[in-house]
Amino acid sequence: MAAAPSQPARNNSSVKAYLQLMRPANIVTAMADILAGASVITSFSIIPGWHSTIYPASFYYTNLPLLLLSTIGLYGGGVVFNDVFDARLDATERPERPIPSGRATLRGAILLGISLLTAGVAAAFIVSPFSGVIAIGIAVLALVYDKYGKHTPLGPINMGLCRGLNLLLGVSIHEALPSGDAAGIGGLLYAQSPLEKHWPIALIPIVYIAAITMISRGEVHGGDKKTMKLAVGLYGLVILAITGLSITNGPSLWQAVPFLLLFGYFIFPPLFKALREPLPRNIGLAVKAGVISLIVMDAAIAASFAGWLYGLGVLALLPVSRLLAKAFAVT
Image (cartoon, rainbow, N blue to C red; front, side, top):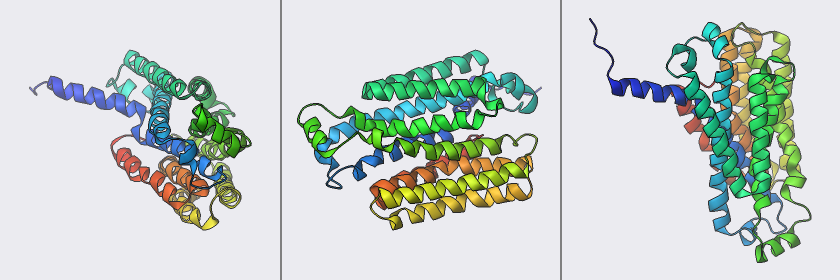
C-alpha cells in the first residue's frame, strides 16, 4: 500500500493551487499598466524631464508602490472570482482547475478573492480618493464580468474596460499632487490634470483586451475565422494608436518603434496560426501570447510618453511574467 502524502506536501500543493487561482503571470502584466500610466507626466511638463521638481522623490517612492499593490489585489481578486463563479462549469470543461480538482476549496477561494479586492481598493484610497474610486470601478467591473459579462456579447468590452481603468489607475498617481509649494508649481506647469488630458489612452487596452477576450471564447471548443480576422484588425488598430501617441505626445517616434516591432512579433504569428487552424490549442496559444504581450504594449505606451529608457524598464517585467507563465496557467 502506498504511503499517504505528508502534511507539508499537501500544504505546498494547496498554496500552489491558490496561487494558480490568482494567475501570477497575468498580475505582472497589470503592474505594467500602472507603470505605463505613470509615464504620462514626462510629456506634460513644460520642461521635459523636470517632473522631479514638481513631485518630490518621496511622492513616487510612496504612491507608485501603493498603486502596484492595488493592481495586484484588484487583478488577483478578479481572476479568483472568475474561478469561483465558473466552478460548476469547470467541473465539466476544466476539471484540472484548482477548485473542481479539490486542491482549493470554494470557501477558501471566496475569502481569498474578497481579501485581495479589499486590499486593492484600500491601497488605492491611500494614494488619493480619485485613485480609490477608479479601484472600486475596476473591482465592480471585474465581478460583473465574472458573474454575467463573459457569456454575453458585451463581455469583451466589459473586460477591456477593466484594463482601461487599470491604465488610468496608473495615471491617477498625478492626481495625488502634494499640497503647498509643489502644488503651486504644478498649477503653473499644467493647464489641466494629466488624467483629464490623457484619459483616451484607456481606449488602447480596451480595444486590445476586447480582441483577446473574443479569441479566448474558442479555447475549449474551437473558434471561427471571422473572429480571428477581426482580432487581426483590432491588433493593427492598437499599433496605429500607439504610433499616433508617440508622434503627438512623446519625445520622438523612433523611441517607440522598437517596442512596437517587438509587440507585433509576439502577437501576430500565433494569431495567424489560429486564423489558419482555429483549433482550441492554437487559440489557447494565441490568447497566452496576447496576455503576456500586454507588457510589451505597455512598454510601447511608456516609451511613447517618457522615452525608450522608461519603456525598457517596463519591458523588464516581461521575463518575470514569462517565467511565471511556465509555472502557473495564464488562461
